[in-house]
Image (cartoon, rainbow, N blue to C red; front, side):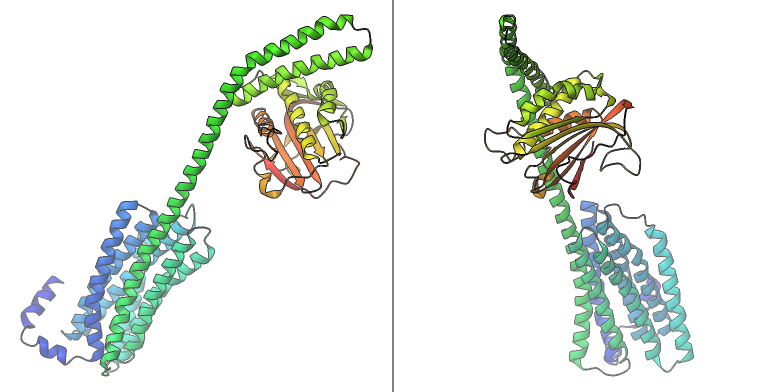
Length: 533
């Protein structure tokens, strides 16, 4: 190539000006536009290479490689136009033009790689280098065979070979535009960046379409305005593609920056929650000693007066006070466990018997204005967890149901042993044997906009002084640590149902494990929210 350029330079000074004046407008377009296109392509290739080196994104690297092919093709195109117009060597011009078309085709896999990297979180693997070689050799050979064959068959009609060459090149540049638009239509992310890339590829295709139209007038003398307009469109087309490529990179980086900001915001929110939890732990540790002392005084006082009481009603009241004091101590222990994330000693116990022992307290927690029904299945369901934590689950869920009821209503508490098969499991609950605790109310229901947040620590919709927002989050934490799960079903105006699934290590059934819903109404078409581990 250097030898050809050197030899041409030695013989051009005498007749170069005359030769250019004798050229047709078609050849003038080629010579003028190819030089400017090479400068523009080299500039954008350098810019794209710098961006790719700076940010190291897969899509940016693919576009940088594409622009390298475009820059090389623009340089080769200079020699192709020069050899045909100045040296009058049509065979060399056709051969070099075949190389140009092959280089453009070699960039197609890199367009596909860039769109996949933008459109998918995990883009499919693409061996772009091997595909680029296949595309380049195949399209370049197809171009060479066509133009040389047509030139040999119709040596006096140059427009046929030129039109074939430019139509094939138009087809090659249309493929990236189609790839970009299809990716834009199917993408789940980076839609803005893909739209910019698709617009830039379309501009490159429109530029080549103009070149096809101008090529049909080969051999004729076009007006100066047409020549200037064609050159401007050629340059603007490739410039627009370059600008859109860089804007594609910018749009991608903006989206990634927004994602990083959102991730940082979530991390800060989690850190703030952690700090609140730590503060709660310190507060609980500080007051636990004094509160336990108060409970101890209450229990000593009731123990001292209980022998002197003769009325059974008074003795029952004292027993209730003792039971409440014991549960108060359990609540303090559970609060410490929840705040400090300290595991409790797991024990094997029967949840049926445990719920039966805490039933009187649940009736009181449900409130005097609400009807509370407790249904305990026959048999036995043995679980491995802290028994006090199971009681805390039941108490918190009943308390939550009571607060959800406006006026008077009904709270149904049921416990049963169930076996979930692989095709019958609830949302987020694995197949297996479970002890299922169900707490259902006729309250106001949970609105969809807050349903996903009900287990967040300190989140509450209750008024000031009516709730701390740790009850449901405590239940969620206990169930998770026990290896279980919670399913929440709710509809505004029709109530809420909490189903707690605790893995059972032993199950004994004395009747069918199916537990019917409350007889008050058929089960409503609840929307289900599964809370996984």
